[in-house]
Length: 316
Image (cartoon, rainbow, N blue to C red; front, side, top):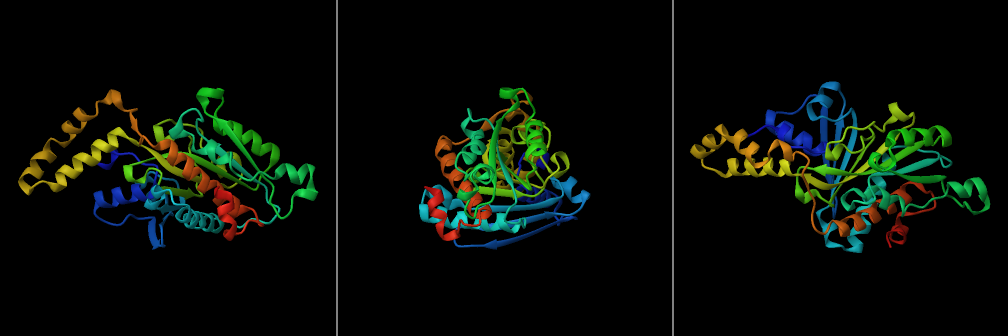
């Protein structure tokens, strides 16, 4: 088979799977465990060493992936159950006191639907910091939570990380939650997989842009990144297709194809087309549904007075 480097994914679980299959053994410094629920299953990838981080191309940290193919059913009951799973996993990633200030950052370009997940989420998050500051009698049992959708470098002319660092320095939150669209190696994961990581995020990495990282080291406070795949790199589709042909061929033909695999791959995806990404035609509906679920989960996880039984209220 052609090498994993020909494929691209932001998901730690996919990176681990591809590299471990390529090497034919478990990876040092990386542990994986999975548990199954009624409508989803949760995979926890823990990267503990620099060697493991280098192997799968992800920073040291914890990566929680929720796979829920039934999200495509557009069923409110299923959405609610999956939202509960997301809220529970978010709560387990940190332990905040009741007065902790939280900043939710919606990364991405609100003018491009596949990249609009972050801005759509912050539009639906329960914002309460202003109540704590200016109308404390109305704050109830809420935590001070605020949001920002800083846009992208091409719109603002400012690095997203610089904007966030400036806000963090001013308001001094206890936690930053960064929501962004990701790239996957499988089309089936678009709109059906949610990844949470305590290692932060690099805006634009899913489409090959190198930007200032948003993590505890760069901005000074803990960061939880929440991402959902909305695109697949065309080169990755070619990679998967070619490997599927190799695996389904007879042993004789398999060896012949392997000899020319790299040439076939380069012919299918010329170097000049390295920025070509694919997204489904119903991406607007998928973004609408998944942003609603993530926003509801953030409300449930970080607002003390929002109980899991009230999740549906925040998914309307």
